[in-house]
Image 1: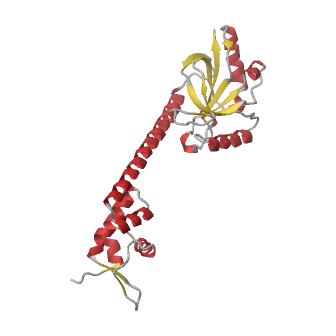
Image 2 (image 1 turned 135 degrees about the horizontal axis):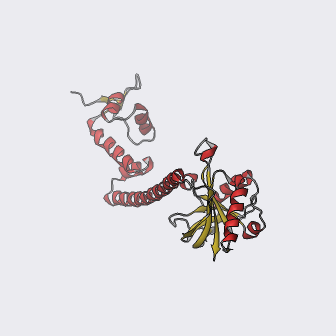
Image 3 (image 1 turned 180 degrees about the vertical axis):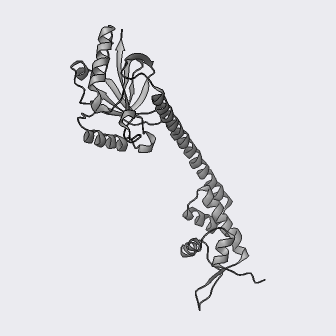
Length: 272
């Protein structure tokens, strides 16, 4: 049997495409042993099978074609070990990133499932909260466009991706505005740093302590009645407000098209 395989046969035998082999030829990564000058057909031999297997193996490990080409040109053990070690470090970091993303997904799942089980809306209560790390941008926010613009600025300054903090965004209302019953202007926007993974100048924290809380159906623009009820609860129980309030939307129009599903929580730090 003649040791010569057409480009189509080579592609089929190695579960790749003719287009890919054309590109490998173009960048001088894997060249055919013979090109028929009369018709341009390209042919390969069994001697090149292992070379293509090596390319596919290194691609599967995550190496770039440029890195693969350099290795095949050198074929140096020390260089190959260095490539593997670098890729191992990259893979380990990628695993950490994926684990962090997985924890965030689990937190969002838990929040939404809790919200669906929640029966008591518009009923104030208190709860103890641990210290929470956040990434905060302190800016006055008075409208939905302001909110979106500042969120993008916060995301860019902290070098975060939206997929990492869906459901972890919050707003604050200053203590001064709360006691003066002004709830339509926000003093800052923040993102929960749920696994202490971000180290930027915007890093901040929400203090541990006791919070007076309330869940209600609706978004930030529907907060007047919940705030009124929550402040009455604080006054009736002799609590003192000790800081800015926190608003966090748990379910909004991007999660459900049904307005009756919308859910927001208000938390106000207090002391007896």
